[in-house]
Image 1 (cartoon, rainbow, N blue to C red):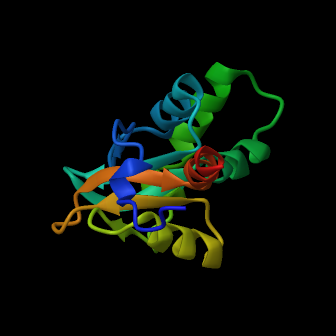
Image 2: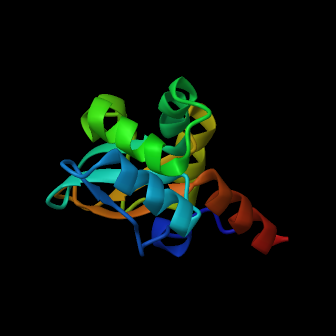
Length: 139
């Protein structure tokens, strides 16, 4: 196994990101349309937070039983991205390797690592699924 492979070999670089002022219904639609579970939140290009599918599900439970349009209206009226996004993030630098990503994901209670450059601009994301697929490819 090549544990020194660069993080860029497994990260997703074509990211769906949300701007800090965007509506939560936009984020929900992004996740559904792109079939993703983690959306970095940026202010310009700088990482300021992360919204997971689980974060959205927490507020959707409050309004269960409503149709999709009603849910979007309710969440946009009652919540902002900054209300539900995680801000205490563990990130990994673009110069890191797969082993370092595995160590961080294995020790944390999260399933994604935003990949940032030296100026904290988001350049990718590595998820638990990316690591599992990497392992499968090794065998």
